[in-house]
Image 1: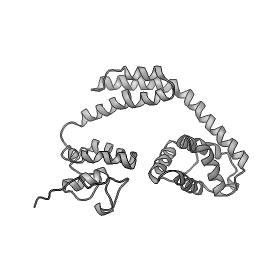
Image 2: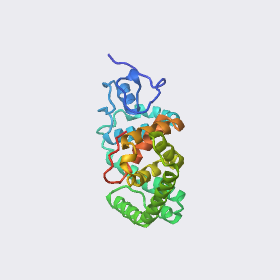
Image 3: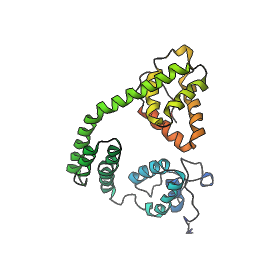
Image 4: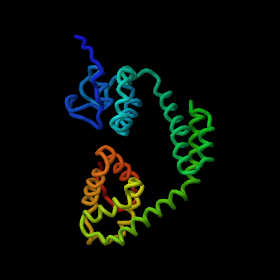
Length: 247
């Protein structure tokens, strides 16, 4: 028996869920709409679009996430349609010629942004390789600036650390929040490097600091923003010998 399902009353939610009754993300809603068993990897959806959709669903705020609802029926039947290669080039083109230049503009690197915007559209391997080489060149040019910024953040954390002389978990959290709220993700990675030099006998474990900082950030932000920020900070942390828990 065919069951007609409507997307009119769907509210997309962050993350994965045990059943539709518990909530649905974009891909879980697509599986439901297509009549598949509950999953965020519906077989009717292109693997490329599925991966992109899961990340996009969790990266958007509550209101913006609902703008994805009209795409639910359009995702059905994309598996095996022969368009994934085109989709990959389209995604690379947008990232290189639209997204990255916006960040470069904010960073005051207008010339580099102009270079990327002036690249030919990424539609095949030759144009993808050309875009990759352009990105490599810009990455090399900006490396010293990124390292200088990182060192600045480390020094900010050290200064606050010295003034506060933290003892309890809450003290450490207060220092981190005081420095990090405006630039939470960047400072989180820098703070990890700086605090690694501290006397381990006088401070809580990294897991305790992580959990306390998570609670403090949630007092200012919603859970989704906090989890996303901390996840990025952990994945980009390069300090050796530090074992932070996964979000």
